[in-house]
Image (cartoon, rainbow, N blue to C red; front, side):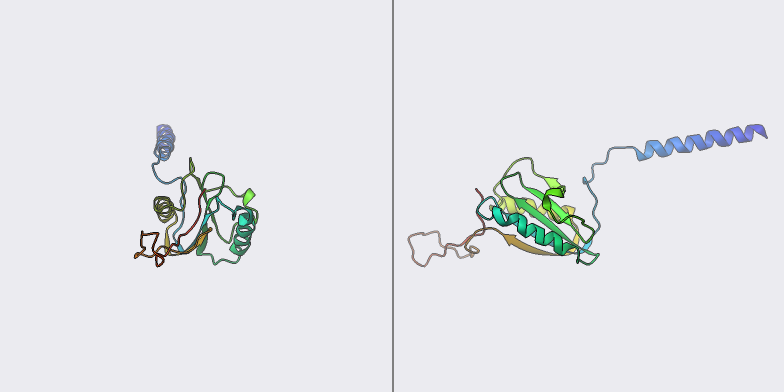
Length: 170
């Protein structure tokens, strides 16, 4: 009978060690896990220009408004100012209304042109991959004169040429 109890203890030790070895391994998944939201609103802020001075007031308003979000909604904020571009996410559990206290979810290693097609695509692909949502909204903030239509004429001498763009990235 005594040997049975010793066997049980060895067996429990074996199971405990197996659990330890199985649970401790490198994971190639994302750095953080987010739950699929019903709605995600993305603020794409290209502020490496004259709007940087009002950036912090605008983000403060976003953070204050996040308190009244539904549980299934979130806000993702991309900011490109004089620091390296970075991404924040907030929801109705976010306690801070000052961006200086928030820790970015992701910071890019170096600056890039956030007003270029490549820069915009890079950021949006990252957001779609890491912030799963049933639907998305997009708010774009920067200086600019509007969108370039698909019929945009490259002949700058033409008076009918429409010159419009989103954003300025210094």
